[in-house]
Image (tube, rainbow over all chains, first blue to last red; front, side, top):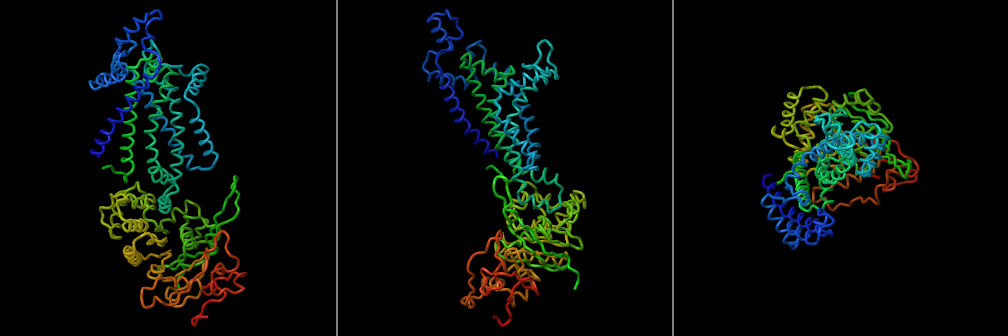
Amino acid sequence: MIAYLIRRLLIGIPVLLGVTVINFFIINLAPGSPADLFLSPTATPEDVARTEAELGLNKPIFVQYVNWLTQLLHGNLGVSFQNREPVTQLIGDRIGPTLLLMGTSLVVAYLVAIPIGIIAARRRNTVVDYGVVGASFLGISVPHFFLGLAMIYVFALTLGWFPTGGMLTLGRGGGFADRLSHLVLPVVVLATAIAANMVRYVRSSMIDAFGQDYIRTAKAKGLGTSVITNKHALRNALIPVVTVIGVDLSALIGGAIVTEQIFQWPGIGLLTIQSIGARDYAVLMGINLIAAVAVFAANLLTDIAYAVVDPRVAYA
Amino acid sequence: MTDPLLQVRNLKRYYPIRKGVIARTVGHVRAVDDVSFDVYPGETLGIVGESGCGKSTTGRAVVRLEAPTAGSVVYDGTDIAGLSTAKMRRLRTELQMVFQDPYSSLNPQIRIGELLAEPLIAHKRLDRTAAHAKAAEMLETVGLPKLYLNRYPHELSGGQRQRVGIARALMLEPKLIVCDEPVSALDVSIQAQVLNLLKDLQGEFGLTYVFISHGLGAIKYISDRIVVMYLGKVMETATTAEIFAQPKHPYTEILLDAYPEPDPRLRDRQRIIVEGDVPSPANPPKGCVFHTRCPYTKDICRTESPPLADGVACHFPLEAAGR
């Protein structure tokens, strides 16, 4: 297991390197220069050239990349073009709220999806099942931005139950209840897509498990329905479900960018949108790297989880 | 003679064939069609027949893992065909089954000890500690070391797993065990071991077996009486000695003839070659179901289904001197 982990981590190095190369060149393909954006419209071409030289943007792109990589190896992600703050600090300030949002969404989604999926599987081809499948189809189809705006309109503007956005009410300290009420709507939006997808996995996985011979054996033992469902079927059904968590995490990162923007959640997603608008290459590269590491880690964790939940899987 | 432990009467199990968008029932697969037999306490009744003849469905209906379409299964005075789920659960302690596939019938996520102890705990016979102690005892009874309690099924070989399957069936101290092709998935060398184990356990625990197999060797070795099935119907039923000495039904004769002869000097004898395939149980032939392949078919066989009389369902049963 240890050897397997080391091997996996070593494979990660070229993968992450490749991701940074692709990101770096794609970002630099965009026309225009960051310097144009934060100098005043009256700036002379000499001013622009001076700023570009300061930011190192006048050098060939390959040199820029090598410089960035060299800095990275020193643990330095560079400095934001916009406000000259270190990128590590910018990301560090924002990552907490994002992890809170994503983590809560993931937990909520699973807590909702697993029981519903089991119920749908047990009542296969009934009205209940059709309702669940239909609702999940809707949940998968609806875009984050639409659901987010609809939620704000109904629950924040019309009913006034929850705040429209942000992470805490300014000037009121932001106690637990305050933070919780800010968390509800964005979590619902993010969790909907994850749960809608997960319900289908749980349902089909449970249906598959119910059809297995060992379920017939369990029935022959005279076990009750709940033991058969929750012990015999669910343990086997969760194996394929676990593998989806890694995929979900990448979807969650994408969803978080949009959701944070809609709810003005002060996390990495909001920072991403702001940095794209400002052409803040340094910050974008930092975020991309963090996201790539997160997805890589999620996949690794998935594979480890696989070995934990299935006694037949062993890594050598 | 003592009263039978199990009386199966006119058992039918039809599977609907559904077609189209609205899943209209367009016909039925007659997996088991009007099957009757008795099983007496302490004996082994063998059910033999080729693939798809309904022998496994019959076995599953006997322990109510499959609800019969019609007919009755009277176990110890109770008709279990129409029994409620709750009452059936209690009766499961007396009726157990050993399954054909020792690979898929054991839950891969659950350790052997738990698999074995589980029914005792579920039926509140013993607490967890005592149930696991009994599981250890039972493992040794079927010839496996106690340390397998903490193993998962995939860590065992096929023969070992089938021993676990047998131990599992024995845990509740049942009276009747349906063995559904318990040795068919095993290597020949292991088959004999498992058959001997089943025989020993029968003596030790006073068990009654319904032993289902397509292999005549296993059936002959273990059964006291035999039921021969073809296309969902009983063709012949008699004691093992009678069937092997003098089959009365042409199908039984052919079945025995197809059985490999271990004596090389006898291998060149004339064989009875059967023409054609087994007809579909969704659309069985009129009259005697075997008439399409029977070498002795006469007109009446095509129109009238022969009743099971005197242990054979044939208009023209074979006699000692042949035909």
